[in-house]
Image (cartoon, rainbow, N blue to C red; front, side):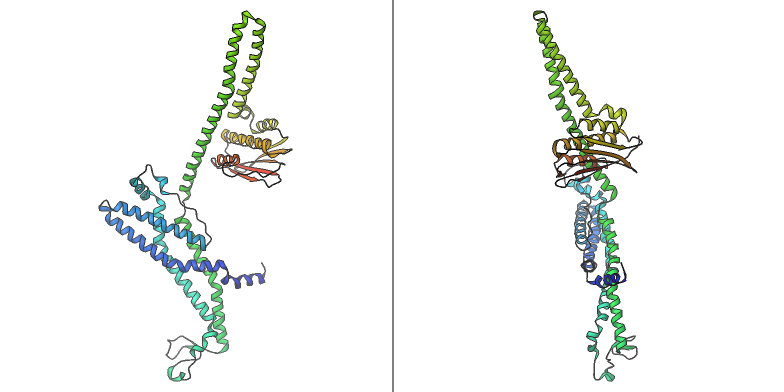
Length: 439
């Protein structure tokens, strides 16, 4: 940005929406800080004083819940005026081991988030007083001096020798007394105006600097802590993993019951009939045994497919490159596989990568209408990168309830990431990241 651009930015700054919102945030912070400080101090004193009786516990718990409500208001104010989007902290129910008012009170008192809201109420008041005072003084004196030529006439008085009034701004002495310096000449008026202009231009940068401290307070004390957020994410991911494992077990049970098991039962019945006909009609028995032999081959193939769906042997023995090539060979669309791995990750990451590619290639076969597809796999520092693309019709969606959404949840359970790019008309590119963990 050149010098003209810098000048335009500085001159526009006091009138930009951002500057006005930040100014409103700082000026409105003091009355709210007074109210929240008074609430927090009153709640703490009353609750602590009543701890000698049973009433102290519910009073403190209710007070902490109220502090969280005030914190929600502060987050909304920061979101609306500062554009600071702070996530909601973990709820109290996350700490409850049972239901009922006693469990809620215990969880509220144990919640570090609740006490951080109280700490914010106590710390915000002195800072709000400082920032309000500094901002109000700069804004008031800036505009007062900038507009001095417009209200200078207020000092005019014909009997100024008797009343000690002057046709200008008097500094260095009390109003109505002699001495000091009177600013009434055009050069002096110009200097006053320039000083006022500088203060006005300085105001948005001063307010922005003061509001940065407010941002730190809101994020640090009213937002979720990193550790608590991580624990919450792990608990949520654990639920997703459990649900996925249960769904896989149901799928395996269904495949065994409807596939190999039913075929083996029919095979046992056919062999029993063949045994009975062996002496009466050897030719019919031989034909039945031949049919049973074909059923055995089909049952073995189904069991191999089922085992491959659980964990393919080629993946364990030879790694991702050959395993993905085998997947590509079974796809109905020609697939090019490119792998650039000098070593193998842990078996769990290999398995997740394999089944991710398997599901994506199934989508290509069933829904894409593509004529060719590609699979690329490489390592980027501490991440395993995977990309599956096709030249199909596009329009794939990762909305809730879709197969891609479920795949994204499973990747998220191991700190992975799924990114979909599928415009209407194609092509479609799915990029996945997984953490690299050495064996």
